[in-house]
Figure 1 (cartoon, rainbow, N blue to C red):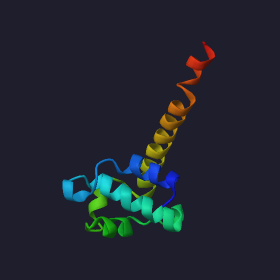
Figure 2: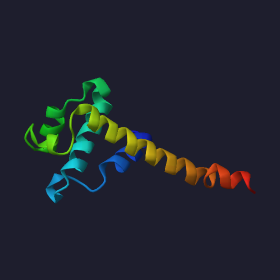
Figure 3: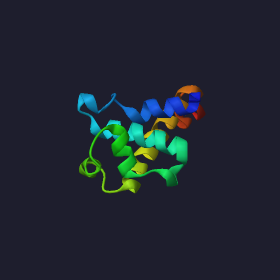
Length: 99
C-alpha cells in the first residue's frame, strides 16, 4: 500500500475493527480496501460486510446504500487531505496572506 493510500486509510478507519464495537469504522476500512482494489464501481455493501465479518444486512444500520458509504469515505479522505495541506503549508490561506 502506498504512502498516500495509507494516510487515507488512517483517516477513514478511525478506531480499529469491529471487534471493538465500531462497525462503521470496520466497514469504512473494508470499503476502502475494495475501492483500492477495484475502483469505486467495484464497491459492494455485501462484500464490505463480508470483509468486516458481519452479515450483509448489518451495514444498513449505518449507511442507506453504497453511495452513502462512498460519500462517507470521500468526506473523511478530503477532510484528512485538507488538514495535511494546512499543516504542510503553514496554516489556512487567510493567515498566510495576512503576514
